[in-house]
Image (cartoon, rainbow, N blue to C red; front, side, top):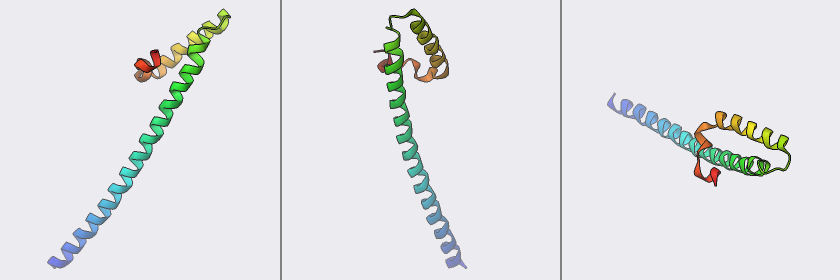
Length: 86
């Protein structure tokens, strides 16, 4: 009876470790995707807002600033990152 109990515990431990490995793998993948998205956001910000704010036509500048406000509201947690302000 004790041997059976140990066997069951061993199976649970093995399945738990397999589940943990799967979760850690998924976590690493999600971190990678998050970094890729952050890089895309930096690129978007730099290529659109920074350059359009210096545009000659006032309509384009106004639209740019307006959309920048939307962006800041939507992504306020990223808005004040120093690398975006440089």
